[in-house]
Length: 338
Image (tube, rainbow, N blue to C red; front, top):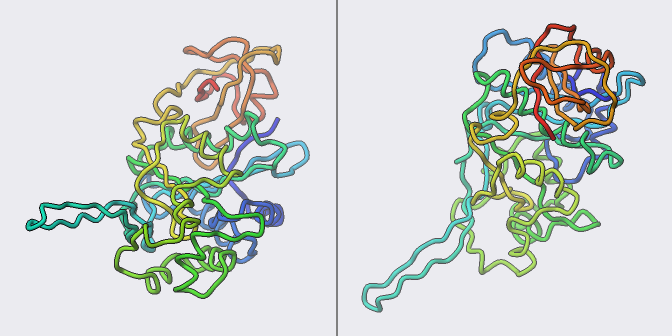
């Protein structure tokens, strides 16, 4: 039974493998040993933080097969976007011009560099092995982050965002980047994406134009990318939409992929998840699938499990489920149905 748990330093070699296999555009998961080691150490410090308050923490989770020790996916929560460095996005909204003499008012869609989304919690680094795509384990890897947030609300903002990877072709070329960013950075999309991951987005603000970009002046291929989702990122997006996230007027700086946003009190796994007392009970394996987690901090665990009966005040779990969650009968378990 696969379980989602906090990352550990010994996961670094396998995390490098996941980074090599990840979808281009997931800038928070890069094939660089130094970068990933720092991410792991930051995550360990975040989980070890005893003060229950929101700050710069990132909580990195990995999907592990406890029997083999193999990792099959990962995801991450950044408690506060823009805490350590500005969090830049492009805001898509019309620029209104008018003429009193001609009695004409006209709106032209523009993209403007902004930091509007700073101080919100950011979900990022979602990746699962291709074989798990479309399975409950993909939902576990994404949605269990919200169960963790439900258990520790003081550590996160009241609003959460997630950037969905935008369109690029099979050669790793982004029409939006070639029409916009390429002119200011003189770097291919792949190299610019890697540089952003390793050095942050600050250099973007230094080189990107501070005035609005008029969308109708961009080539049609670039305009078509604004808010467009990469086909391989559709599942990641659909999971979050089902949770209660919605598209916004903001898009990514590199590929113009959409940014989703929601108030935490609108998210299904936060609002509808319930805590029940566990007890030992055999399970047929044919019941409805549930997302289950303990409510611990450093010892956080989450699984998908078929339950014969829906949890109420109590929840029956078989020995393998109890072991995967690292709980004993009588301890609390949080759950929500898939």
